[in-house]
Image (cartoon, rainbow, N blue to C red; front, top):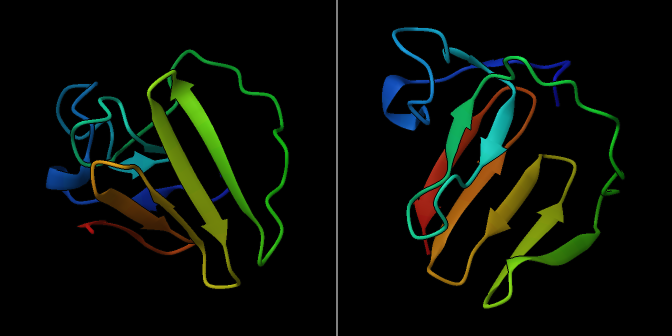
Length: 100
């Protein structure tokens, strides 16, 4: 979602970059899967277009052998949850995280 950077609160940032560098975030997800999701910028990375998750579709993937994450798409945005009970919602205007 690099076309739609979000201004995120300091407590939602990943802390990868000093100061206010992550204020306009374009990446959302987990850096550590046992902690809440966070938001960051893309700095020094070139990203390629990925597959599109159409409205009403869900995908489950395993970034580690013992971990599955499920993301679902609606017209409102995308919601992802991990089995530790952490989740997040991201849309063109919002990034929130929650505990299931």
